[in-house]
Image (cartoon, rainbow, N blue to C red):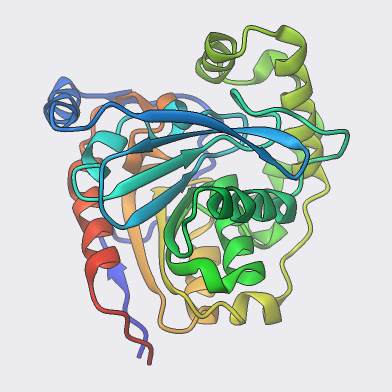
Length: 300
């Protein structure tokens, strides 16, 4: 039987109109406390498949690769939880094509290319095998890594990952068709300009992200079912991703585990657009993720 971790009663999914929610000072203090024990990151660039790819390395131990969401940087997606994860792991956090400090190529974005870029980067870093934690678009990329490069994958954590168009409400696709830089979250725009002060690059990243989502195609069932890596699927109970979609992924990936956490898209890891949240989910979600990654691999 597949194992399911349920942390909230499933309710009707309400599309959260892509706005911010609030966060508490207590949660912030716990993150700051964890940061005191985190090593100063190693930073670098690597020539990867025609682009100059940026990465950061924290901590020591078994490698865990962090893959950010669309329109994001390392810090906007994972900045709040890297100090916690790096206490027990060697964290390799990457920025993908056209995002943050990583260069671009004369080619549209694709989850398959992102997966290939990360696999090549790990070769350059002499990492033969790793665990992967991808959030949102990064979760879809993590799935492609498990599909296309299974030999480098031990375990994967899929945070709010999408693999089928019906995995989000129909309104999402209408929203993406009309998306403009003006309605991109200010926190993400500010974060990009902070690390790459190039407004033209910001527009290019936005347009390429939007085009990828407008043209999103379902990952075939046989590819999803081919994933052999131990897998933990996480969504929020008010996530953009439908609970039904996460449950179906759970059924298709043999031996996978599923966690449904109170909150909106990314709130469970303190993603930057949820920084005002009154919740403290990451305080128990990160230990849950670490427990999953540390336990012996079992397939049923």
